[in-house]
Each structure stands twice: as C-alpha cells, then as structure tokens.
Amino acid sequence: MLRPQDTATRERKSLTGLWQFALDGAGEGRSAEWFRRPLTGAREMAVPASFNDIAADAAVGDYVGDVWYQTTVRVPRGWDGRRVVLHFESATHRATVWVNDAEVVSHEGGYTPFEAEVTEHVQAGAEARITVVVNNTLSFQTIPPGVIEDTPDGKRQRYWHDFFNYAGLHRPVWLSATGRAHLTDVSVVAGLDGADGTVQYRIEAQDAAGAQVRVVLRDADGAEVATGTGARGTLTVDNVHRWAPGDGYLYDLEAQLVGEGGEVLDSYHQGVGVRTVAVDGTRFLINGEPFYFTGFGKHEDLPVIGKGHNDAYLLHDFELLKWIGANSFRTSHYPYAEAVLDCADRQGIVVIDETAAVGLNMGLGGGIFGGQGYTTFSPETVNDQTREVHAQAIRELVARDKNHPSVVLWSIANEPESDTEAAEHYFKPLFELTRELDPTRPVGFVNVMLAPYGKCRVSQFGDVVMLNRYYGWYTQTGELKAAELAWEEELEGWAGEGKPIIVTEYGADTYPGLHSVPPQPWSEEYQVAYLDMNHRVFDRIDAVVGEQVWNFADFATTSGIMRVGGNKKGVFTRDRQPKAAAWALRRRWRRDD
Image (tube, rainbow, N blue to C red; front, side, top):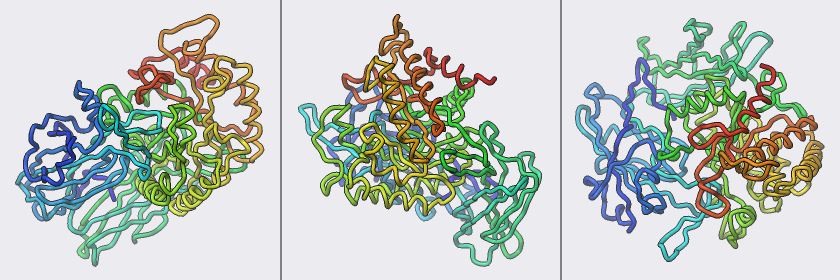
C-alpha cells in the first residue's frame, strides 16, 4: 500500500473537513442500513479529530460502540478512466466503509492505514456518498485489550492502558487517482561502504504487463546521483551524505513504471535516508557510531481534538524537542501519524516505533489502576486469537514504516506481563515474525517493574533492554536516597546481560505551579530532584545508552484517584508550557552547546 501523493501521474483530494456524525447507541445502524441515506439527526464532526471532546456532552465523551461518519465528495472530472482509491490513514479502533450503497472495506486496528479501490462505485464529475461506521470497543481479542462492563450508568469500556481511549477518524482521509497500471509498493534498504552509500530497492506493481520499472535517485538539490532499471536492484551513491541524528538529509527515490513506448505510466517518490543501525554488545550504533538516546515517551494527545492529527502542534512539538536538546522519542503506545515520522526523517530525530500492544498485563492493571480479577494469558482472555491480531498489527506497522530512516528500533509491546511461561510462549513467535519482516533493525519490548531483573522471561528475545522504572515515585515515594540505591542495584543486574539498556520511562507526576521546600511529591522541585537522581544512576552504568523521560507533555487519562486531570508526568503541560523540569533537562541535554 502506498500513501496517496501528488506526482506527475497521481492526484489526491483531501476529505479533511466537517463530516456528518451520529451515535448508534442501540447498535441498529448496520441492520437498518444507515449508509443508504443521509444520517438522521446527525451533528457536524471535524475530521481529523477524536469525537470524544468536540461535544460538551458526557454521553459523547464516554460513548462506547458504533459511531457513524458521512460526507459527500465530488470526484474530479479529470479522473474519468482513472483508478480511484479511498484511503484512510487510520480509524480507531475498527471501521467499515461504504461508497454510495456498496460496502468497500473493513479494517481492524486503530493506528494503521487501509484503503479500497472504488473505481466501480464512483463516476468522474459526480458526487459520491462516503459512510463510515467506526467502533471503539475493546476486548481481550483486540490490541490494545479491554472489556465492556454493564453499570447503572450503562455500558462502560474498561481498559488497562493509562491514557484516554480516544476514538474516531484521527488522521487524514484521501480520495486518490492513478492509472490502471500502477505501482503498489516501494521498499528501500540503505547501507554504507566507506564514504559511499548503497540503496537496495524493491518495486511492486499491478496491471503492468509489458511495463518496466525505472528508478532515479536525486539529492536534496534535485541533482541525479544514480539510476537503475528493473523491479529490484542496488544503487551506489558516491561520497554519500549520510542521514544522522540531527542531520535529516534525505535523497529522493523516484520509482517509475514505464510503458512499452517509453511513456511514464506511474510515478512515486520515496524519501531515502542513507544510514545504518546495529547493536554491538552494550552499544547502540547509528552509522557505526555509538548513539545515546535523549528524549521522551510521547502521546498523540491535545485539548479538544484528542488524538486528532494537527500540523501546527506537530511542528511546535518538534521545535520543543530541539529547544530542550532531545534527539529521540518513542511512539508510545501506538503507531503515530505518518506525518510525524516524515517530520522526524527531515529533522534527524530518532524514533523507537511501537505497536498498540499496551495493557497486556492484568497484574499491572490491578497494581496501579484498580483490581480487575483477570488472568492475563488464558483461553478466555489474551489467547492465540489475540496474538494473531497482535501479529497483524506488527505486519502493518513494519509495512507502513519500513522506509523511514528515523525509525531505528521496533518495540512490539509496552509493559506486558513478562515473568510467566505463558508470556514467553506468547511473545517468542512475535519476535521471530518481526525479525522476518525486517532483519535490518533491532527488535525489543518495554519491560515493567513487575518483572524486574532475574524475573523477566521475555527480555531474552530482545536485541536491547528497554525499561520503564519509577523508583522514587510508585515505589520509595519521596525517598530518593533509597530509590537511588535500589535503582542502581537493578540496573547493574541488567547491565550484566550484555545488551544496550534504554530507560524508556522514568517520571513523576507534577502539578504545574506547585512548589515546596524541601521537595515533596507533585511539586516542580520534586520532579527536578527525581530526574537528577535517575541521571546520577544512568551516568554510573555504562550499558545505559538512553534516557527517555515519561512524558513529554501532560495527557488525558481515564478518571480515577491516581490521576488529577490526567497524567501529570509531562515536563510540559498539555498546552506545551514548560515546568521547571524542562529547564533542568535542557541544561543536561544541551550542556555541550
């Protein structure tokens, strides 16, 4: 699947804007065939955006079940005889789509794209009605998992991840056109050979009998630096300009499908960053040089629009990363919008790319977010069907993000149960699958405190060790000296594994404007002291090759006594104002400036 773009042979039309929207609390819309007519009693809804916070109505904000979106689009007259595709960058958590009266596609998974060819259902120059039913319910057979509970207030979605279950059409929707003969996939793998670079490419096409593939690689100034023919091949770039952290240099690979008469039937452009990634003992190498991660776990989370993509906030967040001296982030806890990775590519920001497999740990749910009484892995809970859904999420993540130079590491789960035999059996084939899909990047998962050093049975499969630890917050709260001793003792154990260690979460909830002498939990002073303690520990352990604070910014969660207006571990507020910790991190991460 290729993301829609405008080229010499392709066109796209954005469906961003106001759609019609209706809740389906009775679950009758499918059987009543709401897609056949304009939605009755609908309100307007922004796309892209989460639907939850747009309306000043708790019945919308906490809604569980089917919601319906509908719009009309006029197909450009110039698309007559063209192949027409309807493309969704995501729909959370699943969707079924109709064009006019025809069902065209269904998709499971809330953070990866899907599309359908709709040529037979539309007419150039005419309007087409597009109807989407989006469902936000979670079960033990979804990624992430959850359960529906009946309460005196009605159905409630219960889940074990610590961020709000925003839903809807969060990312752009496109109508696009290509020729009947068209390219369907572009894959690149870059390498280095001394001062030169190599770009292995693989191009796939459909309805292209008699056509040939031609590729042209251009530098950032548009100068041609290499060419090739055939669906597979390797290009050599003399004196290559490497993609590197802080230097997001991109070449442009144009793949062309050329007809028998020499005419270009289809053209697609793929950015290429020439760099290598490797693990060598306890070192994480980019372009053969040791790399130390500084940055954050983030969330796609904004006031009003929830997880809806917003270009202004995208750019502002990257400016704040630059201001604070961060060189990386993790897409916690789901694949982010493709525009986010495009920006990371251009700006030289390193990314740990994560699936939506969060909440696969009933012990954690009971320990922090309230007792729940389930067993994580069992025939009735997380089971073989769940693992297949998880595997498909990995396939779709790798297929979408394989060409991004910013992505240096796959994270296939966050904080799952990992100290049991059942966990070992569940995860082993998922690690094998990820390496089969992409042998060029390291693979890991994020370990939680409930499976400390010596107890985890899943870390054996990872190329790196990623740890979420809250010594001084969830344990030894307010006792930073005791926390420092316990944290260093555990880290020394992990260091003996001989793998790089990235601390992917450490943080303390902090209410902005709350101050105390001496530092007390929830104050800005305590957040700074807490981070300083962690940094002293990291600096004494050579195997630690990264520190990513939890979190970049405050974010929304489900309500509960553990959360005051959401999770407040951000070093920026939800509207991106700095707490004292942001200045402290800036001093640490930019001390060489």
